[in-house]
Length: 470
Image (cartoon, rainbow, N blue to C red; front, side, top):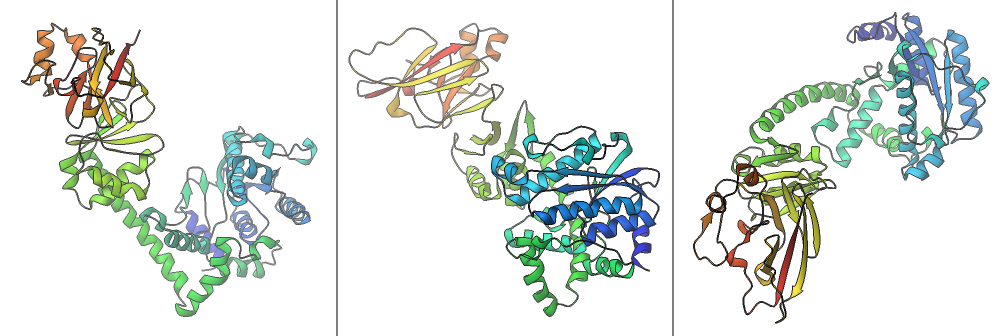
């Protein structure tokens, strides 16, 4: 079976690609995208050609654009061209040229499908005379974006992921379908595409940057992979078969991860609560922890730190850029750092302001001199700083909580204390506590714990003022 026949058979696996629909083919002018155009044309599919001129290679970039326009004339297809100020975009967004080109390219393609521009930095697009550009087709005319990635691209991606470090998802390589992006040539090897172009006398252009080994992918392509083929002549076929195995293994892996998540995760508002004992009994615990925390901005390097929380005291935590995982007794609590809706808030240090659902706490340290004036205001607490170790935990009270009321040597449950104070059900629901390693320091707006009172020997005092929400 020749490449054209295999291509047609392959497309039958993807019934969303219909001959009656118009597709968008990303065409650089290289052999891969030229072959894709020819295969689609001869198979009877309708398409529009889209070409990105990144203006990175001077006259060569202009040559490529002109060539792609000639392809449109050859096949009688519309050609869309966009010129980008790629270097300006890369500098402004502090990304590499390769990342800049990828972001600009796919953002433009997606904007065509969606019928609206979503370029992150419009200054990256050079203003052009409208006469030099073909009009954009209507969004409902374009169904999918077709890219000419092939089997060797996939193999290179897997090897690069493997060497730099990856989870199982990195081993499936390039997915054939991602949203509106479709890659119909992943079944074919590069040499097959080159052979097809030669047999059908297809012209194409060479990108000189593909010859440089300064890019990681080119190093793998020109240096490493030829050495592997010397040792393992069937390495391409073997890795292609492995890709299929990895895809199926990942499906099983995801199913297992979801089962563990259903057993472990309890969603309370915008927080996630995880029972420590149940997590400790899960296996493999490190992998399960990673699969849970990665969705909250944590990295694989933080798995050991999170695992350490399982044995730590209450109040310890690990942070990502936007979330904290807090140890609170028999629970790990994943809580947003910046959110008034958080039910568990870490207070990292004194001389601090903490906003929360009930209002704001203002903490400051003061010297315990003889002139210290203790306010009778229940919304202000004074505690001996010598007895306090940070971090503190600000949270809502819960059944079973107890403390030692100021002036008393016996503990009392908070529920009983609230009854004695004649708090209504609504008032009870609004009560928060400041806790240190399972010890309640202060029932916010009510009373401090006797264990943290100011003593004659106290040198420094922690003052906490509660500003109620108006």
